[in-house]
Image 1 (cartoon, rainbow, N blue to C red):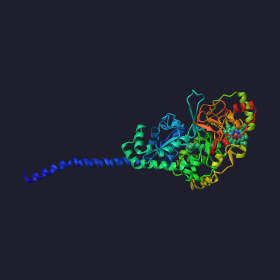
Image 2: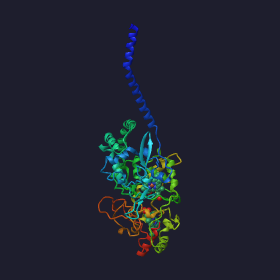
Image 3: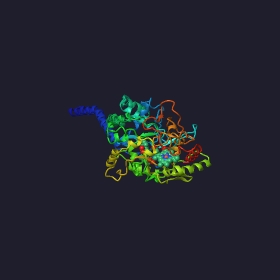
Image 4: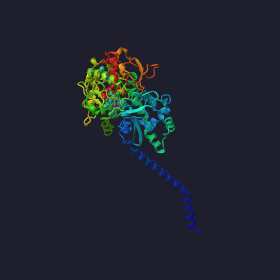
Length: 499
Ligand code: HEC
Ligand code: HEC
């Protein structure tokens, strides 16, 4: 062996020794590049599922609420695992959310991927879809457009706000719960969550809780099928500290209305207090109530819903009242009620009446004043001056009113309990003088009552008990029809059951 070849052999040996290290290095670089690429590709992903069917779009399509108000889909799925005491049914049906069997999210919850993370939150259907049964034995029928009278939004909100500061929301236990819920994090996702999601999640939830909780502390439970329409907006979006809300305005729980047949309602003064005569503004303001902000709003999606609602008919009433009674009841109704409410013909609802879509002053209608007072001039002024400012969507038509709206009564069989605060269970009760109407009852049942509305038994426990003595829940007022004689009332009810 020459000296030269000895050196070459030594070099070759060293190369051989280093080769595995080099390969390892290369592999490591490749892994880093792959992860980085995976992360970049993931983070660039944004978008929301498209539903070609309008009803499906209403149930599951995003209106843009996820970004500002939502939580990650995987956290949504993990909450029932983390907080089993709050989710006795194991899912969101514990709060009256409805599942229609088409996916793992309830009706009214939409999904949107934002910078690689799937977020979920409300759309219109969460408050505007409900169920009915003709009898206890029947399967519930889902009706989109009717009030979500079974939904316990207050209970749900309380649990989500409480979760914010619960130790179980720490990344480790959350991660375990996500895996248990079948939505564990993949390797790339895991990195993304460690860097961007976990650190912000609790802070975001705590910030929200710190603004909303003081308001909830000043209010009674909203009760099933109701929400405070405007007060949460004051504290969450306008950043008004709760203690700046006056005692008079601080309670505003309102029943979810039905939203069928919006076309004929276009220029009526609606919302329960008639504070807005523009259909487009009512729809957009509803979206803000669902958690959309002027920055995140999906106008196209909302306009699609709005268009669909223009002629969405309520399902025909299944009640089968006696035809002679209906004919007699019709005469009473045309005399005592039609000018404010319009009327039902065999071919559909007739949106005509001298006072239809106007406002009856509070002292004349005499119903609970809280919802009216919760909408204040100061709030109105800020809505008009700030929201969607300098865009074609700017609010112009909101106004402070002095009473409640004379609304059309189409789909009435699905709208119980009645009045803006849902304080009167059946139509028969509404035709009874206020002092004799039920004082406490259970809201949220979906079996239809032969006297109109839903069977609402007297309370046996405090759970889901609606107490008309609680602030905002008064069942006083609206005395029209209460002085009819018994046969007159039963005829009028027969006719109303055809609506
Ligand atoms: C968080 C529950 C909730 C969500 C989500 C919601 N609404 Fe509503 N909606 C209400 C309540 C409560 C009222 C009654 C408001 C009031 O007058 O106090 C209402 C009123 C309305 C009205 C006026 C009805 C009338 O005749 O007075 C329309 C129209 C409407 N909503 C459409 C929508 C649309 C469209 C969406 C989605 C973009 C939506 N809502 C989302 C709860 C909700
Ligand atoms: C002067 C106008 C006026 C007359 C007349 C009138 N109402 Fe009303 N009605 C109202 C107003 C205003 C409300 C809303 C009150 C509230 O929710 O606080 C209302 C609410 C209702 C509701 C509840 C609707 C819902 O979705 O909860 C029913 C049902 C109803 N009226 C039936 C009747 C019947 C039946 C008559 C005739 C016996 C009648 N009204 C006469 C103005 C009128």
